[in-house]
Image: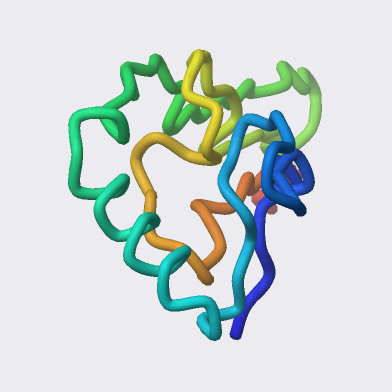
Length: 114
């Protein structure tokens, strides 16, 4: 129904295979669906999702324009610029599947006042 993480390529295909994940199913293999549900509700699905994030930053600089009646300001703003984490399943703050995590946004500009 939606895209799956690339890590699911490492799933077993035939009985006796050794892989990190069980057989992948689109929902038609009842035993695999039941096993996946039990796994997600067990302590095996618990992971460390601690993180440090540079969420917002805003910088501005007023250029010293002597002899002009004009003021000039340079500015830069950013959101969600850096995230440091060992969490392997995407964004540790936004774990819902099928949606985009917070986007990285950068804005630069010049403000002239006459």
